[in-house]
Amino acid sequence: MWSLIQSIPVWLLVVLCLTLGLAPFVPEPHIWEKLKMLAAGSLSKPIDIFDLLLHALPFVLLALRLIEPYLQK
Image (cartoon, rainbow, N blue to C red; front, top):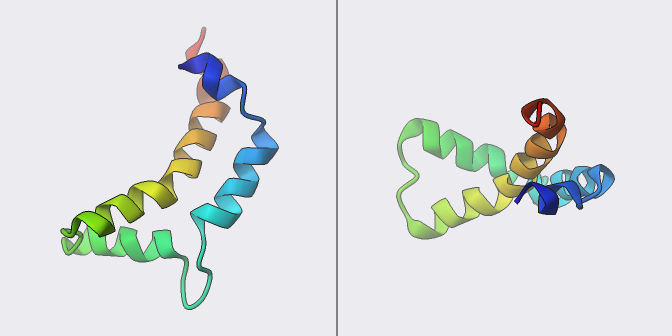
């Protein structure tokens, strides 16, 4: 699993975060809307949960890629 994450360039993950992670940008980033729904307790539809996971995946992968060297010690 780690080798797969290591094979993804950091620049590509940053681009994915800025595009897929934040799209659509207007009126607010989609992930922000879904996080607000999660905090309010109104994130109950399966499509909304899938949408949150889809938009959060680039951020999770980037975080894992950046902290991976510290976890391998």
